[in-house]
Amino acid sequence: MTLSCFERALALASDDNMADVWYNIGQIAIGIGDLGLAYQSFKIAVAIDNNHYDSFNNIGVLELRKGNLEQARASFQIPQRSAPYMFEPFFNGALLAQKMGHFEESFNLIVKALKAYPEHTDSQEVLKQLVHQLTLL
Image (cartoon, rainbow, N blue to C red; front, side, top):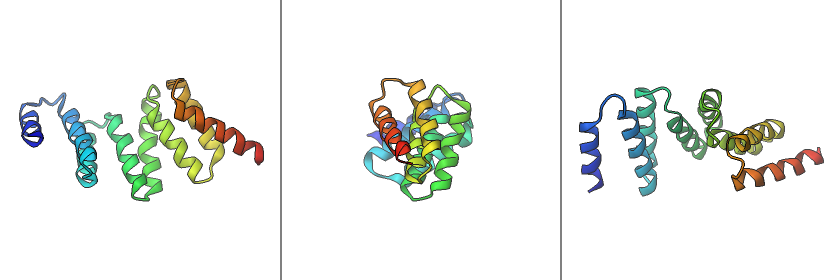
C-alpha cells in the first residue's frame, strides 16, 4: 500500500516538491528499519534541492549511526550555516561534539539549538551536562 502511494506521489510530483517526496520516502524507510533506502532517499532529496536542510540533518544522523563522524559533522554544518531557525542540526551537532570531547563547541551549538527552540527538554538537559563538564575542566 505505502509503496504504491509513493510511486504515485513520485509520478505526480512537480519539480518544486520532488525533494519533499523523497524526504518522506526516507522517513518511511527509517520507520521500517531500511536505513540504506533512507540514506539513498535523503541523498536524492538533496541532489534535487540542495537547500533541503531536513534531509542534510537526517543524512548526518545516519552517518553518525555508521560511525562516520566527520561526514556527520559536515552534514550537520550545512543547515547550521543556512537554516539557523532549525534546532535539530545544532542539537545533533552538539551531541556529536560532546561525544568527541569538544565541550566548548558542543556548548556553543546547544546554545544555538535552545535559541531556535527554547522549550526542547533534551537540549536543556545537554546544556546542564555541559555546564557541569566545563566546570570540571
